[in-house]
Length: 528
Image 1 (cartoon, rainbow, N blue to C red):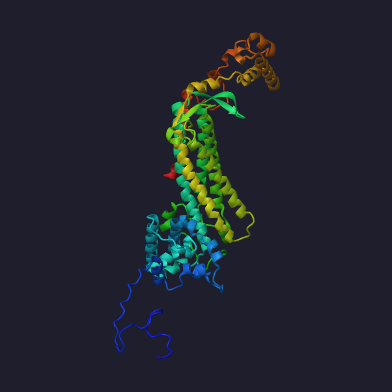
Image 2 (cartoon, rainbow, N blue to C red; image 1 turned 135 degrees about the vertical axis):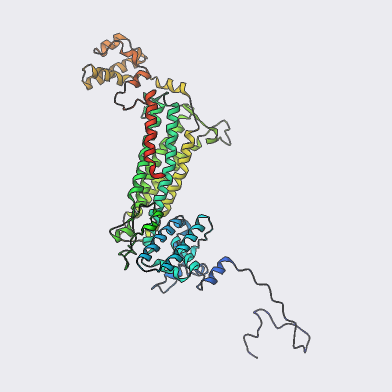
């Protein structure tokens, strides 16, 4: 028909060419259809606008969250809002939280038994896909929670949408982060247990040998390798107890809080699903506003990790110093060191330096979260999205650092002769002299003054304290026993440490290590 805009041909194609007068030209062979992408198939299954395509046009944001907003989300805001790139680490924990929520909806008669079975089966299938690495996260759905909800609806149909009844993403985030922190507390606790065992093994094997104890980086008194290693183990045992108390203390569920002021349903934890939470989480938080605003669990957990990392960094620093040519107290295993591309004679303690360097991140991450929280009004604010990346980074840092520290302790070779020589200090007996004089009835201030005077005289004469001689001792420390100077050897000095519960030397060291190993078993029962 003349003037028609569509004559049955595709755009860009004229009528098929043929001889004049031919009314039935040969049909044009259609081109094969292009393969359909996974994204296109998803769009066909869900009759909605393609959110990725919309985002390019400026129509970003999850399509189910339009609400009263009349304009599509600006693509700049859409890019800033997407968190699934990092919060996918919460995926398994979000599914576990949803399993409990579904069970509570069933108890509240919001779901029928059949609906609950369908949703539960779908969630378990999604969790299996996540654990196997086969779950596809779509950035257009913004976060991990909406990705899982959409996957459930796609799998089980409209009944899957009923799972969101009586809850908000504000509450879901708190649930998922709490479960994540508790899970990682156990994982890090197991790694820390292995590090402590490595310290105890090394103390048992090499601990009775002497080494100098330092203050202000100056060697001042003799100690033992065992005493020093057990100092680190005591520090890490406190960290292990902190993790244990965190795991036991943070056991309160935020269910029923909704967006901020509760829901219209009475939701209580269901015993049949408590195994998902190690059978510990059985209480609800008393205030819904505080619940959705609180980030106490990640904040306290990150504080523990920062303290733990500080101890690891100190251990790394000592390994760097002790393996240097100036100290030469020990050498590190070759597989935990590197060399230089330009100076091949070098043996760099890279493992210890990375231990020292990486752990500083945890302090910055903790500070980052504190700054985020410091000015927020109740209840939920989008600033709280920024709590996750620092948390995840601190956890990953400790997951790297703890096995590295344990490996480095297992690859140490000590130079016992050099350590003993460094422990036999010429003036370290000054404190012993002061204590000896105090035992003879001399006041502490006067005893310290006399010991200082003898040390100063020996230094000016270029002599060690034990070589000062009886005349100098009688003149400067008149109440001291004449033969006391002869006892200023590392073995005798360390044996005089009456204030120590354990000498960490000889048989007492082995006894101490055995008791610490038993104590460690008690403090790690919660990890089993």
